[in-house]
Figure 1 (cartoon, one colour):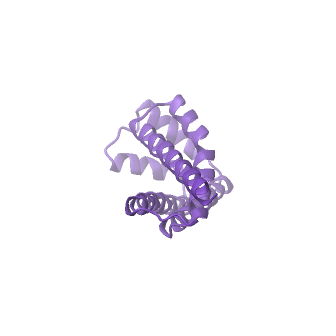
Figure 2: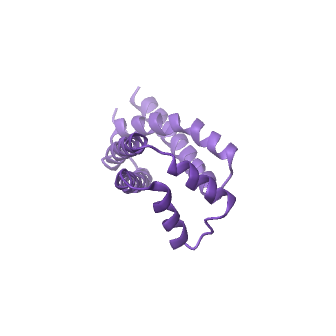
Figure 3: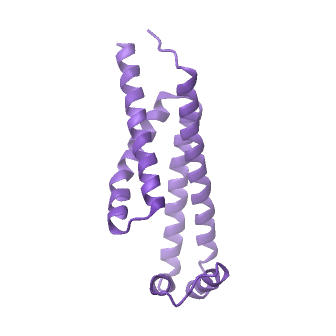
Length: 158
């Protein structure tokens, strides 16, 4: 028995795909920006960015971030860029599978997004921000919805 997908299910899957493509685009841009920092004074560059955004570089948190960033070696910067590109590739793969309404796309998204939930919860525990909370809620809703879809699809095909 083949289960027909409702129009609303297609819409939700494509909306999740767009979110995955957005995350992949942002991570790619961030990774490319990180690579550009490889042979520069990272602390000085970031301090200029902080000032350009009209933030106080003397702020305790900004100062701590600037000091920490200035200690990064070119090898560490390269590794950060590579990790960003790998995650962008994973998000792109999820997005493609979901956009094409493929069951494997649902499974890949459940596995990857679900595996990152503990890290997101830990980060939220360390420092609560509205954006971290929103991303966690979106990812929880995504995983729950896709698990529901997979289970309903498997029941209908049995």
